Amino acid sequence: MESDRRRSQNYSYYYSSSYNPSSGYFTSASIILIVISFGMFIHALQWR
Image 1 (cartoon, rainbow, N blue to C red):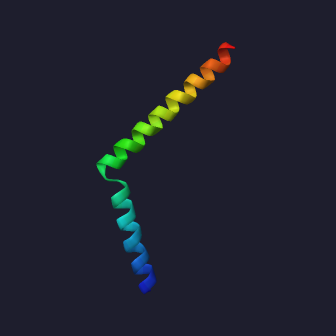
Image 2: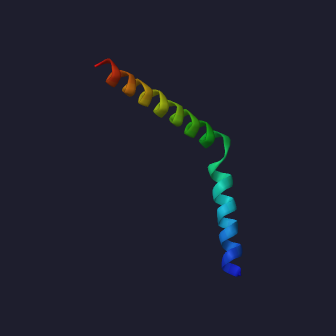
């Protein structure tokens, strides 16, 4: 019971800290960069 309450507090703190605007912006920018680089890699493979 006590461990469950402590775990829920840790999860809520982890999610609130991981979803603050700066980290959300950086993760979305990194995902966009990965998608663009992957698309260019597939495009380069098709042109060979």
